[in-house]
Length: 144
Image: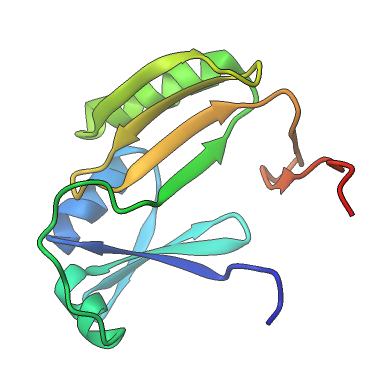
């Protein structure tokens, strides 16, 4: 298996509501057969009905609630940009779960959840480089 991710699909309660939220952040989606696709750098973020996604994956869907153990993250170029993105998310209907603040690694980050409870971290990490297209370039951590 190649070391890459092509799509991230979020199971949502209401596709129209979820699309409106992400478009409120300035993203532009395309809807195909009740599924919304957003180009997100070199991959796609997909919104699909939670029940349909569970059924498609052969998974018994448990009731929503609690932390699912996954967080999506977007790295940005400055602490000011962290503040701006988290504020825009809140205006679009997100719940800010941790206001932006200095991190243990010397960066700056904040967290919010979208209307379906998906966790997002918006971070400025001075140890990570962002290419001109916004893609993340991991440093050499010195491990074999």
